[in-house]
Every structure is written in structure tokens, then in C-alpha cells.
Length: 306
Image (cartoon, rainbow, N blue to C red; front, side, top):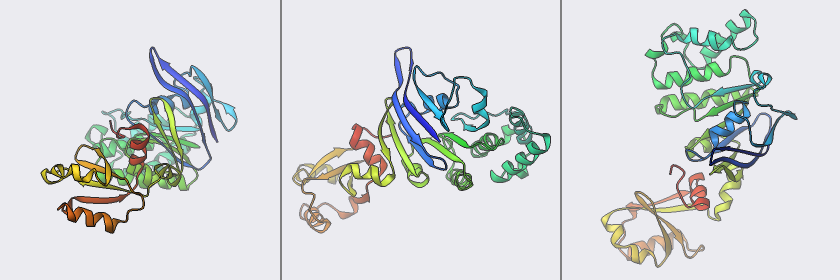
């Protein structure tokens, strides 16, 4: 459905995107992951035709997306990173304004607004001013405004920033429902747990370049290990670092040490026996399956939120 080929974009001396290529199939829930400033929002703005690329192309159903082409707006919905609502107006008034940007009959717009409010669970607050809404409610109304014209593709640029866990889960459920109904979703985030939960395929972008692309399982294979071993930073564990170096390479994180075992064939039983022999409390040890954040750390040498 969407083909991005060798796309580049610079702002003065800053290379925001550097020869980015991606292929996104119809009906996919595709995750675009990376730290702030990696190029995610720039790519979104190029897809919707808000920015003009320096080079490369974007094909939508084999037709090239032109800069400023109004036709693409009828097929793509966009949930921006920043709240884009009129604070003094009601939810209903906001949706009527945003819906007026598209060619719909009055009846279709009324029906679509009703369905969108139902989806985002704001029907009972449709006559309330947006300024009275919580952050999560505003995020949900932003989502409602993006789907009034029944788009084929929905771009979500970090739609859960600053919302509480309950609202975040509600947004997840709404997006999954839209995806089941056939809408292709492209989802940017720097929260790896969100991407693992939602996305069929993922691409990691850093410094304007795609550094990895595939399913979750394909990306995890990059690590050549199925689990990570971390030890809480305490006075006790700090005093045992020299002895821990006998069995593993140690990466120092903010609040923990990550162990990369020298012997990949060492069993956890043997490892915990060693911890016991050096008087390291097992309560300080965590063993978790490898994650996307581990992939990012392995490939770039820094954490996803840096």
C-alpha cells in the first residue's frame, strides 16, 4: 500500500532523514520506533504531503504522493503529537469543524461524528468545552477528528504522550479495533512496550536512518540471546563488580547493571550458584526476555529514551 523509497530531508545543516526506505502493506499495524529527534515526525509530515522531500519518493497504491496534493488528505488520517483542538469549543463543535475539511454530505458527517464519539467514549461529553477535558480525553478527541472521513491509512504520531495508564489502554483498544476493521496504521513511539503490544512489524529509526526492520521476533534475533540479566545497583552489588566481571561483561545503566555472559552455554543454575558463592543476594537479580529496547541498546550503544 505504501512504498517509501530513498527518502531524504534536511533542515539547513540538520539531516532529518537520510535515504529512508520502507514498505507497508495494507492492513498492517506498523511501528516506527526511535528516540526524540530521530526523524519520526518528519517522515509523517512527508507522507501527508505537509513537507517536501529533498529526494526520494512516496508511493500510495503505486501513485506518487506529491507535495501539497489535497487528494492524499482524503485517504490518510493524522493524529499529531501535539493536541490540535479548539480549547474554547465543545467536542462536537470541534468535530464539525474538522469534518468540514472533507467532502461529505451533512448526514454522512453527522453519522461519522456520532460513530467517532462512540469509539472514543466521549458521547456523553460532546457538549463540553475541550478546555474542561483531561489530557487523555483530549488525546481521544484528537483521534476522533482524524477518522471522520474514514481514511485508508491512519498515522499516529506518539498519541499517548502525557496520558494516564487508563487512557493509554483505551487508546490502544480503539486503534486495535480500527485496525481490525481494515485501517492500516503507522504508529510512532519511543515507548518500546507499546510497540511490542500493538505492532505487526517494526522499524527502528535513529539519526534519520532505518537501522532495523522486521517483526518483533526477527528483531530480537539480532541479539543472539533470548534473555537479559540485570542486577540492581546497590552498595552490595557495587562492591561485587570485580567478581561479576569474572563471568560477564557489564553494561552500566541508570539504576542497574546489565550482564552479558562470557559463556553463552552457562545455565541459570550455575550462574545463581556463582552469585551465592560471592554473597550476591538473588533478590537483586532480574532475568527478563530480551526486548526491543535491548535491541536498540545493542545496535546504537544508547538507550531508546536518550
